[in-house]
Length: 284
Image (cartoon, rainbow, N blue to C red; front, side):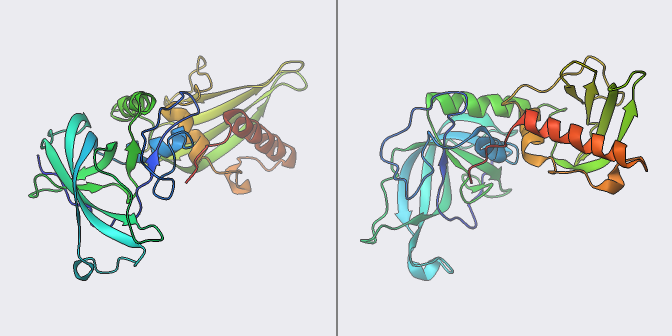
């Protein structure tokens, strides 16, 4: 397998997840280098998984300092390191991987100019292979590392399982149109909102209002809106796309009506959806 050296790297941010599972943190990773394993979020992990064609469970084996004259452009408070890691498991990757990989990482120094102990740390490495350079990896981002724990292992694998599906929810690019249809009785109506994704997948939202009842909203991933569609479960890839990528409001020119009352209903229903989804939870 051809694996790639990280071209630019800054501080490693080791992620965990406390929104669903209580993460168990590794000892020895200082907060100056890492977002601690019990303070990151589903979105932090999903951000890395969805952009990473290569995901590895690895142990840091060896570290070597890169001399300043070879680390051009690296600030004085960072130390560029060449890191070698032994692979424990290939979680995502089409061509397999070498049993040991290496990459560059810029590690922050403390007040005495020393760097934290990274050797023997178990991490998830998220990146991509580079053709013609076996044994080297390029991280998807300079901080595309996740601290290993039993909880994080479940989380990374669960998100990856969704992300590799052919119909996995793609990044939302915006709203294409929206309209409100009044019902046959006063207070009854339905708002439909159509979204665009970077892969042109069908994606739409609907809100059904009936007098004396709570509003019901749903998301449909079919060309024809599915009447059996429901709201997405929290901490799933579809929920993540909506929570983190929906715009905060609908532009007036996206609403297919000249009636100001209908425009207000559409925006109110859209706000209801946003409130129901809840915050993205991204912490970096």
